[in-house]
Amino acid sequence: MRETYRYLTDIFTTLVDLNWRCSLFVFVMAYAITWLFFGAIWYLIAYLRGDLDHLEDETWTPCVNNVNGFISAFLFSIETETTIGYGHRVITDQCPVGTMLLLLQAILGSMVNAFMVGCMFVKISQPNKRAETLVFSKNAVISLRDDRLCLMFRVGDLRSSHIVGANMRAKLIKSKQTQEGEFIPLDQTDISVGFETGDDRLFLVSPLVISHEIDCRSPFWDMSQGQLEKDDFEMVVILEGMVEATGMTCQARSSYLADEVQWGHRFSPMMSLAEGFFDIDYGAFHQTFEVDTPSCSAHELSLAAARLEAHLYWSISSKLDEEKWEGSSLTNQSGKQLDNGKGGVVGPVSFIVGEITGIEEQSGPGELNGSVTTDQSESEA
Image (cartoon, rainbow, N blue to C red; front, side):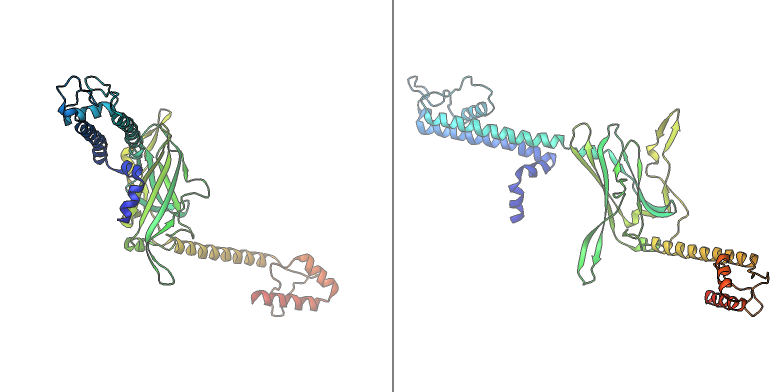
């Protein structure tokens, strides 16, 4: 009951949100009820004044001329409220109550006109139909883009008129349990589609592929292909903008369930250059094709790439050290090769010849040999 009362407190929005069948019914009934209500009052005035008993008396001045029953009173009510204009039936100046009722009906009739016409105008001018020409792909895809795992979907505008200031938002809706044990059945998480870089602001002159990079801030960071097939979630995408023709805000929404996200797919091209302009084939709007994509999560892919990079770095560094070590023979001032006392060449690659010379000037050859050997041992450790 309390929820119903809240709807009635905002009766204008409630009427605008009704479907067309209910709206037309309310529109007709609003006028019919006011006409019948005031028609009954006009008939009651004529009955109480005795006008119905003096229909043939030409010396009697009624409240309303030629009102001889409820039907004629109802017609007079319609003529008054719709301002059609009086003809055969007209109010006389001998009825103060009728004059007050006439003013009241004129005011209330204007209010009903303003309210109902306003509701119908807002309902007609709503940009809901404009949103139907904004289309989303049937499926979302996950594949590599610029060596990064990305979740992508396609959006397009079928009309030639543009959506002004179009921007895209996306949210992931799924159940969640907090660390304290609280269960949230419909937890909403923002999905970045370029808010930081401005890529969420669109210019829809042609169909666009919206991309969400799966990084450490993404809710899909730890989701692999196997987990995607078992998971239960819904990704809601929202496109908002202003209709160029009317200036009203338009919003188009779509959603993708877990089984509507295709792992290892990419959208088929739908634009081709023909005679100096691009030809768009909307028949390929929903088409995708398979591409080679790792089945692991973006987190695992990032760790594997980091391990590979570290392995390559140390392999290349070791190789360079070996080449430099083998190609350089550190000698003392007498031209003899320095060794570590075990018959091997001493000194790491990081030793600089200038530093060795400076040390040799302050100490003897034996001390230099010992310091270099110690440095090599520390380097090997």
